[in-house]
Amino acid sequence: MNWTVERRDLPLSDPFGISRETSETSETVVVELTRDGTTGVGAVTPSAYYDEVAASVTDVLPELLERVDRVGDPQNQQRIERALWECAPDRPAARMAVSIAVHDLAARAVGLPLYRRWGLDPEAVPPTTYTVGIEPPERMAEKARDAADAGFSRLKVKLGTDDDRARFDAVRDAAPDAELRVDANAAWTAAEAVDAAEWLADAGVTMLEQPVAADDLDGLRQVTEATDVPVAADESCRTAADVPRVADACDIVNAKLLKCGGLRPAMRLLHAADAHGLDSMLGCMVESNASIAAAVHLAPLVDYLDLDGALLLAADPYAGVPLDGDVFDLTAVSAGTGARRDPSFGDSD
Ligand SMILES: [Mg+2]
Image 1 (spheres, protein in one colour):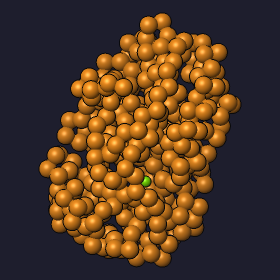
Image 2 (cartoon, rainbow, N blue to C red):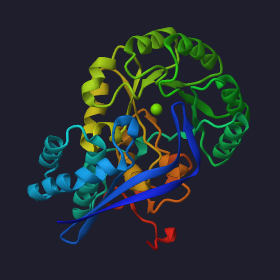
Image 3 (tube, rainbow, N blue to C red):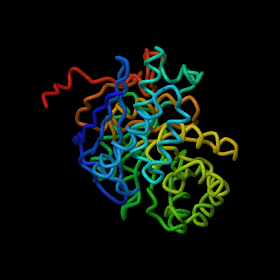
Image 4 (tube, rainbow, N blue to C red):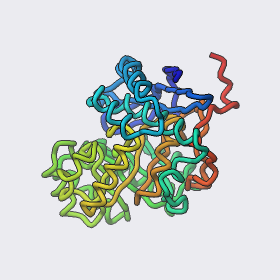
């Protein structure tokens, strides 16, 4: 097996703000694996919030790829996953890039898209939200209007600022027909969140994501009990093992490959959520189609989808699963994840 690891810093079309930070670049690590003439692609955009950065990912990747090589058979993903876990249990972002590349390679080797390998229904893919990051209210309004015009009927509005009401109202007025969900990224106290949930419910918001600090499960439970708006745990729930802990404190868990370390761990998280009577969601970072495409194949398993990350890049070297309006069309994928280098990107480096 041959592999390449490449660091790509992909500029965003606009600075992307959430309550704790603003980013202008998606620091991406791309892994390509080739075996018997078939190449699989995977990638990750690590997050310092989750204690991994591009450099720590590229440091551990050679060792992870060595483990994959030692297993030999890319179809034996159970053994590969165990080997990755044993090698780097606290490096889920690095494991995610390898997990995607191996899944892509193995599915391409047998000529099937991932969702077909898993027997999933492409018609069950929920529409994705488009995320409006934190900016001045007038700019958020402009983004919301553009997204609604482009066919996104569900918007996710980032809040958790000292002027949430003005920002939210600007978006509401700019996209009066859109379904709005709100993500505070852990910014509020429980009391602030209960207050916000009240006016957000009156405004017709359909989901409230991570209103309080990641470790404040009592606060999360208080908010969930106080409002009829479904409350989602994101930062509070990283892996399947977290699901029992948050199960009585929220209505929805937001699964991300980045947090749990790849496709099989994400599937386990989604099944755990189901077993605990929770709804589920798939989310992402601002990241390339090289990784988003893989997550889309899990979309038939979830109730809520938020996989707009690649749309926020100024340009993406990879094309992924095509969107039809706000719905990813998995039937357009012939094999693997569907991610491939985009010839129009003009890669000269
Ligand atoms: Mg979130």
